[in-house]
Amino acid sequence: MDAREYYLALYDHTHFVRHGKAQLVLDDPSPAQYRTVVPNHNSIAWIVWHIARGEDWTIQTILQGREQLLTRAGWDRQMGVTEPGFGGGMERAEMIALSEQIDLDALRGYYRAVTEATLAYMRTFDFDTLDAPLDVQSRLTLAPDAQGPSPILREAFLRWTTPRVWIDVMTVVDVAHHFEEAEHVLRLLSPETQYP
Image (cartoon, rainbow, N blue to C red; front, side, top):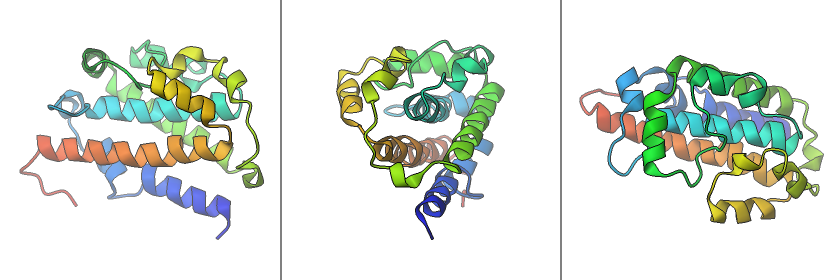
């Protein structure tokens, strides 16, 4: 298995695997469960939005220097969410408001569009350039508000100077972490349901 095959297998596992956490979280919750905020957790709606937003910004803008799908394809209008960031450093009240207002069908559509775009890009990505220097500063200026308000994250992004870090963190590690959180929230909301 080469690097591309390995990455695509990881991507499939974290984003799509049937009967896995991602598919469970994307398909099973009711609209009320998507929007419910339980103590000390984000809502499922926010989590799915956050995953898609971070990945969209990473693949489209940071790695390709392009406008994000969010605005290029009008997903911000379709979802009814004008937040330009990906949720890092977002206040809890803002997370709750986003969870209440977001159009859930459009959110699922945005998630699908982002994953399709990521797969299309990564199927042709030159994996020999994973550790090639990336002009992060110039890419960050293309969509400065996408970084969000967190000073800790803003400092970290400046140190992520290779495609490897962006790809690993924003399309695999963060995704896996947040789908774990979303599955936990779903189980809290449906303690009587036997999930696989």
